[in-house]
Image (cartoon, rainbow over all chains, first blue to last red; front, side, top):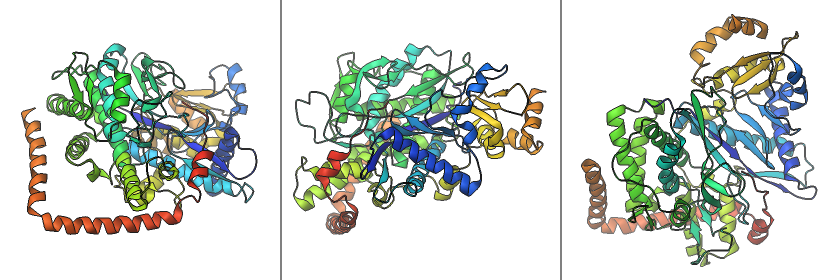
Length: 495
Length: 65
């Protein structure tokens, strides 16, 4: 049986300092994040200072402790909802907490957007009135520079990596049909033979390899980073770099849900049906992205051709058979909703893609661009097209175009609000978040797979969290309620 | 597999039938949709960045992951 597909989304946001002054994006990102942390401290009273890496050096030399989560001078905080919020590659990055299913992944991804919006508001009060920081949830500046939205999925370590690569590649090449965020033009170095006015994906232009370790250049469709942040003998954290950052909740749900399901099938070695091995995945991912009519057929290894939709139908058929044969427990309760949504989405893409303009990012964006082209009589190369594309991703509620398009919501607003400060209840993120809510001042380092406590006496005490599904509310609430100090907690855990 | 095929076909058929049967209603609906879209564009015009060209040119990011 496939193990539960614990998952999480990490997003590097685009950041722009508007107005006079130093436009260094690293500085701007730091100002943004620090402003948010100060605001949380003021409003809620939680103090994250002890997670600032400056203090962590102390941990190295002491018995029973371990290296802090980062060794740089850059801002790096772990939030009470179990997420990490930090500066990475000159972008603010929010790594959501571990979630037990795709719908929770949507909720804590949305919570991340809320945190970025609040960060912009908080930063405004620390900047001169002529300056402001603006954050975009996209993956490209339209000039050849890309930044990522990564996903992570828990996998059984015993599954051969080659099987994962073979099984997931056709899905990664074609899931952009619903998970693409849409983009005006192309950024392929050297350009394209035929003009590309609009494409499904923000990221497809930037992938040059089938498999590899890189994330910032020569990006591979399947990334081989092997850093489980969990029991290395039992688990793999499958790290996905090929996706777009979605604003649409339906798109995020489908992206994470279908990928979880395909990975579960790979884990259980559930095959059958047509062999979907592609002749040239890098070429195929671009060809599919560049064709919003969805009619392009890509070449398979056996010489035949299939459209992206045909490949997706084949995967869905397999998923239905898998559900009947093995069940969908690995999807943490999201399985049946996911199958239904996957099917209705493929049907709509097949009959009338534009009917999904309230569901999918690329369709919403294309529909808006078409309406402007028609009303204003402008061509694709009019700067207004790129401007609309960019502003679709502006996170400021007063500027966001996405927010004005009546997109379908899957999670309740109050639930998102709660998720800004509260961790998921059914993964180890709960233990992390609840300990930070109570005793942030005594935690010198919070990592994905451990917390390090400073109890005021030697040595620092490390609490390992090597099981992503241990430390859930059911167990932790009882445990924490019986402890009035972190020392009591550590003593209980040690006994 | 066969069941899937059936569902796909029936989805297509339903849509075609709907189009044939409700042609006048569809025209009316299209007009209403267009009016709604015009209204939406007017609303969006109010919040668009002033100078599209400059706005797009100034948005430059350092590459990330």
